[in-house]
Image (tube, rainbow, N blue to C red; front, side, top):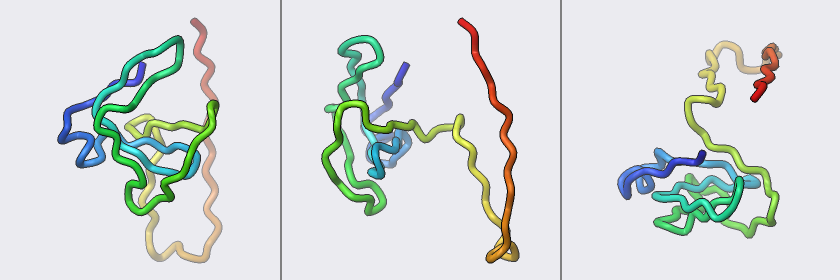
Length: 93
C-alpha cells in the first residue's frame, strides 16, 4: 500500500520517492489496479534539483521512508573503503 499525506507533507517532501533518478513528493494516491497508483494530486517533481524527466511503465520506484537504510558517514572515513552486510529477508504470505 502506498499512502499519501497532506498538502504540507507533499510541499515539505515527507512523502518523497525515488523514480529512475528523479525525486518526487506527492499528496495523495489513487489505486488504479493491482500495484498501480496514480500520484497526480499535488505532485512535486525534480525535488532537490533532481532531473525532471519522463518515466516508462515499470520504472524503478522506491518510497524513501523508515524502511530505507540511512547512515551518516563520519568525515574521518572519507577516502576509505566501508563495507556493509545486509541479511536478506523472505516474507511468506
